[in-house]
Length: 122
Image (cartoon, rainbow, N blue to C red; front, side, top):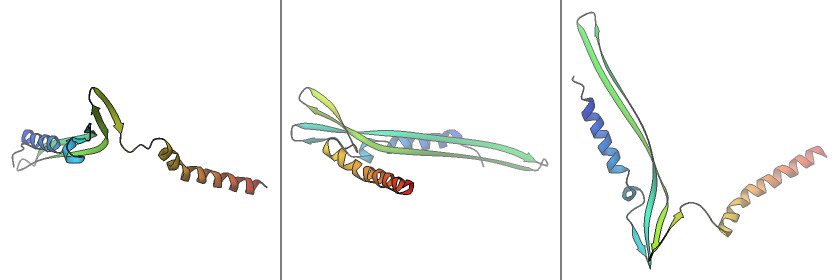
């Protein structure tokens, strides 16, 4: 078995290039009324590989190789343009009143914990 490390690396790299695209995660850019919206993603990669060969008692030969890659892709927002202005709209983050409502469960939990501590101390 002949090792083809370069070919393996090329195949993995091509796969990552084809999958780590905004279009495959979020979709194409689009227009919403007067606004043009372009999705933005964050990509994280991890990669490892190794190989080797050996001889046992002058008669047995062996070789092997392996490689692995991990990829995390996360949509993080949109670039939004209108006329000459451009801004970034962050995905997954609540603003204003919506942000306050997201904190309600956490605040209730802290309130209950405090009441329990007060009851224990009394």
